[in-house]
Image (cartoon, rainbow, N blue to C red; front, top):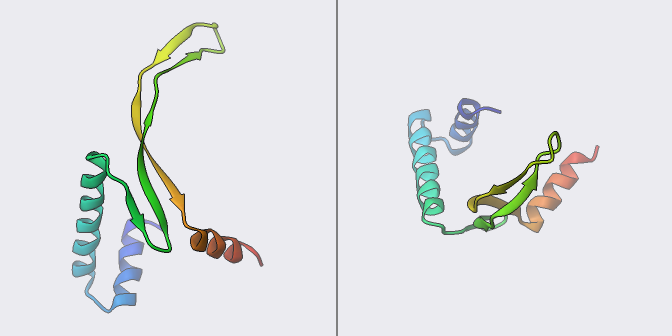
Length: 95
């Protein structure tokens, strides 16, 4: 499902116009992005937790030439689904 399809389905489910739904989704995503840029976590009940994690610097080896390289530290966004979401996906996958 792409973004346009998602907006269309959400619009039908809520009874709101496509334009209003599009604005709400864009505002939601903008606010989430803003929070993640500040390093904050976001917990959505019955869905999961988005968290910004620090990845430490590490040494990797290039397998083709054996050269060692230092990978600098960075921030990465991670998602941990809730148990109810895991269960729903698991039940939906059976059948």
